[in-house]
Image: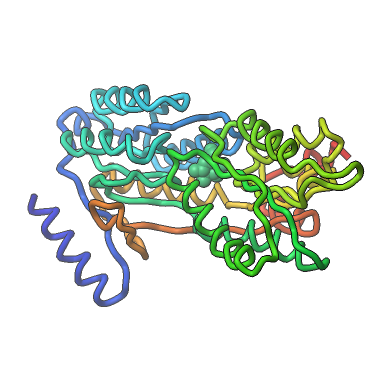
Length: 356
Ligand code: BGC
């Protein structure tokens, strides 16, 4: 308790002096964990479906291991009940800190509550857990992701005259990030819709971010916006990530429309970058996952050792102001693929260009 009061005081003084905040701190380490020579971190993941999450996991585990900690990883297969059970199992195992990538940002508040009761600090990784006593949140600037996707589309539209027709595919409704991506997209698209420069011909949320659901949305859009023979039904699909872009492009391929319609994405997945090279996808957003995974691993180890973590920002999650760390993102097209994802060693040049 004393430690917590001291940390809160230090955090207040720090934030007044420098604008920095400290992670909120849970109770002392349990007796089980005190007996261990290496800290144990529990990583509870929503899914491993998208390629990015496998990379996140591997880089996180490697960095934590290099820092002298062990990691137990559990994956919930997009199932909220299973994710809560996973967290319970990790708590029972006596982990010293928990890192959660929630399937449902609201449902996982329960997991945070259970961890708090057990005195285990929790870091929300990439996706926010709302209305909960979180210790730390680490992610990218997600509103900026949406803005960059939409700005790309708006800039492409501005190259030719006439009103443009747009299809919007949002992510999973249960993922707070999906709302933030939409919010960023709205910042750019809504004024253009009001000015009459863009018409949104179809929009929907892709449940659980599944490509097959995005494909259904794109199929519905093609049917709804059917154009005269030879004319395009719409000019662009503002897809919120590479998985949904892939599903939408499959629908376009089947109608002979792939490569003729602008398609956005996010994650710089290998398959998406190959599509960018092939010309069926137009852009993606590169989020330096290695930076997120390694900084999160460093923070998790510190939390496990009950050492404070310094964050530059705070985000109100509906219950507390969560000390937060936001990382920058980059817009990627065919033109800067080599100077970004390849140069950074995120993807291998021969793999990305092999499909050519
Ligand atoms: C992540 C994206 C990812 C999506 C689907 C979001 O929360 O920020 O990078 O593509 O989930 O897994």
